[in-house]
Structure formats: C-alpha cells, structure tokens
View (cartoon, rainbow, N blue to C red):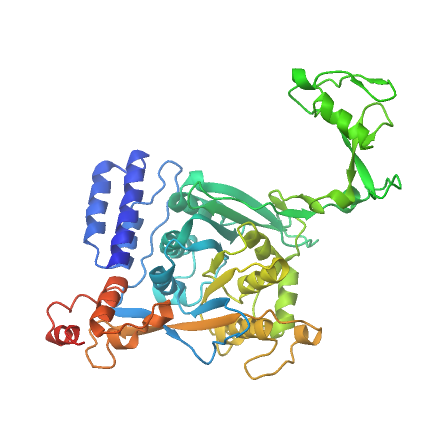
Length: 524
C-alpha cells in the first residue's frame, strides 16, 4: 500500500496548502482530509481530493465526473509479438496500450519522481475522447468532462515527474484558459513558466463572424523551482541573415555590425568619450557604451570595430556565432505547420490513418528544452509522434533519451484493428527497424532512403484480474510479472505477495483472513 499512502500524503498536503491560501474553509478541508485518510484505493483518494479543488478566488469551477470504480486489478502484460530488441544498443523504450489512467498507476511502481519531461496533447475537441467518454460518462464530451478526465491523470503525472522535471501541454484557444487554471491548481501557479504560441497554419480561409484561427498553445510548467531550461535557438530570419554582407577579406568571413550604445541605465564606468587609435574622439552616447573603455580598446586592437557612421559599432562574424539563430521566445512561428505532421505520418503508415498528428519538430522543441538523457512520457500518445521526436533528437545530438508512450487502442473506421495496432506500433517499428512486423519495407519513408533509428521497444497491454480470484495459476500473484516492472524475479512467493500488496490496489483485502493466501505465504 506504499503507493496509496504516498498519494494520500500528497493530496492532504495540497488541501492544507489551500487552507493557508484561503481557498478552502478549514472545517470543509478537515472533512476532506478525513475522507482521504479513509480511502481504500488511489482512485478513491484522488476523487475525494478533487472535491477540494474549486478555485474560488478566480471563479474556476467544474462539475466533477467520477470515473467508475471496479474490483479488478490492472497490470502490465508484455506483448512479445509487438516488442522487439536491438542488440546494438542498450537503449530501450516503452509503449503501453490501454487506458492511460491505469498506465499511470502502473508506471508509479517503477518511475515515481523519475520522469524528466511530460508532453501531452489531450483530446480537447468534441467526440475525441473515445472510450473514456463512452465508458465513464453518459453524455457527450463537455468541458467538465475534459477537466474531470485530466484532473486525476495530472495528479498521477505529478507523482511521476522528477523534482526538476518539466510538463508541456498542447491546447487550443477554446480550452486554454480552463486547462491553465487546472494546471495552476495541480502544479501551483508559481510553477507556471511560459505559454508558447505555435503558428499551426497559414490558412487564408475566412470564417464567418470571426477571424481565422492560425495558432494553438503549449503550456509549460515545472514541478518545483529547481528546473533548468536548455538554451534553444531558432534560425535567424532571412532579413537578418542578409545583414551579414560585409567582409574585410581577413579570413574571418562575413559580418554584420552591432551597436555599441547602451540601451538603458547609464553608469559611470560606461559613460565616457572614446578616443580611437587615430586620435578621433567618439562622443559618449546618451546612455553610455555597452562596455568599459578597455574592452572597446581591445576590440579596436583586434580589428573588430566598425568606424563608418556617426557612432562606433562592433563586428559580429557569422562564422563565430555559437548558434545560427536567436534564443527562442514564446512565439513559435518558425516550426512546421500542422499539415506537415499529417504528411510525416503518411510517409510512414499511409494516408488517412489518424487525424491531425502534431509535427515532429513541435514536440522535438519541447523535449529539447530538457536534458539529453531525459525520460520522456506522453500519456496521450496517439500516433506516436513523441516517440519519433525522441528518436530524431537522439540521432541528431547523440542523446540517450528514453520515451514511454501510453495510448488507447481505439477502433475507428480508419483503424479497424485499433489506433495502437494500425498506427502507433507500426510507426515505431518502421522508424526504429526500417521494416514493419511482416518484414515489408514498402512505406514511402523507407523508399526515400531513410536510415532507421534503432533501439529496443517493449510493448505492454493493460490486463485485468479480479481481486477475489483464488484459482491457483490465475490469482494476481500468479499473473502479475514483476520483471515487466524492471524488478528481478522473486525467489519465493512470500516476497512477491508482499510486493504486489504494496503496489497494486485492493489485493490486500482478503490476505489476512483467507487461509489459501496464508498457506501460500508460507511457501518457500
């Protein structure tokens, strides 16, 4: 029950924080805390904690839709037919097929506080929630359903993310404000970092009674204040590149000139008239120079000053630029647009298999903001774009990132065997090995001379077993394989029973009173 107790402590800490912030009345909070302490499962604890999440100060409120509770234990079962191994590398990735809530619960066993980057692109449009809406709600997808679906999953995701981890969430303009409030509630508003605006298309299509929507958003949050952001650059605009048109034929190459005037805050050390080596006096600019006198003199002695015009300028050489661009800001208008994501997927699995996949480069930028050995989780993986983004980045910068993808095998008219089987697994198999499961290589990307990325993939499916199952060979202690959680096989049944009772919900209910279990606990 270690996972359950840890979740309870986290939820109670959040409730107590809301008492201090005067979001929840103390008497109401104490009742919620009492109920959390009495919860018999993680799902119950999360649902009870959700009752205390109304963001009263901003008016943020949604009617909670509770997920259905069952008496079955959900566990990972490896699909050996879909998994594959690359003997050339130790780098291994994971794909979990099934409800992502169950997948997250299972990931807690191995990855608590170990995930470095989470990227999600949740289903935020009508009728895009698939089995979740059909199984848990009787009505169509509404904003209440979206927020209710996201809330428990984000609670679990917060348990998985490392102390310095980052969380990205793609969202559209209709739901942005509400989803941001939910993230503020769960990750704390002080851990909000940025909202990035992605230019998803350049369509000139006119919409009646409003203006054309060409953008979507990407939220960025941290778990704590200990995060670090990598320096990411985007290419200079063509107009800026054209400024590098001067050349002194001294072997340093082309350069542009940059002003030496200080834009603000003049100081005594940078307020002076500069005298060049020819004796010419350059009057102090209104707000001073960007550098002290000695540094400008050193630039002149190294032939790095540009003297034409009314004020001094410094030469900026293209060949000396650390990056051929400028540091990214919150406007991402330099990335491929949404139609490119569709083309990228078509080149791997064919046409009309999946609607509106994000372009690989968008997710690559998110992941690249973290470190090169990050564990990356996407629990709304869909077609598997995040997996491809990780593989491409590793290929480009020799990183050792690992991806964990979670997706439903939702059956549609386009995917009669399910999205996971017809799209996600085939995409990963083809780009990682260069061929499909049937050994065929007849996809366009391969025909264009593509070189596969390699690495191994373990594919798991969410299986169920009743907590009251007592038939030897079919009990939770028989069917759950600890090696699927990167744990060495137990040498005796007692250790395995204790591990399962600590990590899977409900299993301990019958242990103490059932003689069958007692006798098995005594086995060597």
